[in-house]
Length: 207
Image (tube, rainbow, N blue to C red; front, top):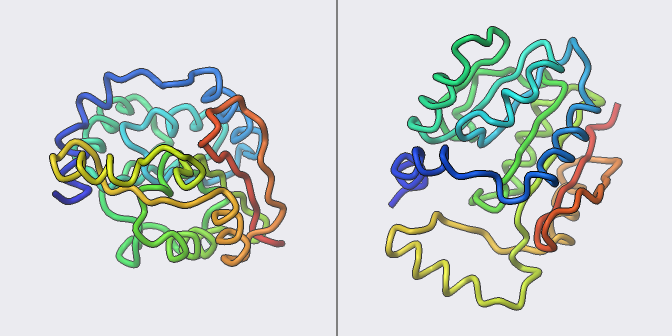
C-alpha cells in the first residue's frame, strides 16, 4: 500500500481524532507563530486536514499546505472555505513540487512528518532551498530510534496489514546532524512538554 493510499483511507478517521497532547501542540504553535511576521509566506508540509495551517493564517500574509493525500486536502479545503490567505496543494514533497519557487518562503513547518519521509536528507535540502536567507524551519517528529521498544517489527507487521504507514527509525542526534548537513543554523530544541520520543526543533537558513 502506498503512503497516499494509506492516508486517503484514514483521512476521515484522522480528522476526527483529537490531538494526543493538546498542551504541547499549543506550545508548538505559539513558538512557530513567534517566528512569523504579517508579511510572511509559510509552507506547512504534510498538512493533513489543515489544522496547523489554519492556526497559522492569522499571523501570515499567506500559508500554503501540502499533503500527499487527496482526501486530506479535500477536508482541509472544506475547512478553509471562508479563509482567503491559505492554499492547499495535493502531491508529494519531491522534485515535482513546483508550486513555490526556490527562495520564496519565510518559513516551513513539518509537524509529524520527517519520520514518514523516505529520504530525509533530500527533503531537508529541498526545504532549505525553498527558504529565503534568514527563513525558519520548524519540525516536530517522532524519533523512534531513541526507544527500547521493538517498534520496527511491530510497525512492519502493522504496515503489512495496512494498519500503519512506512515509518523511519532515527535518533534525535541523527536528525540534528542531518539538519546541520543541509545547511541549517541556530538549531534550538524548546521544551514544549512533548513525549520523550518527540523531537521539536527550530532552525534557520543563514542570512
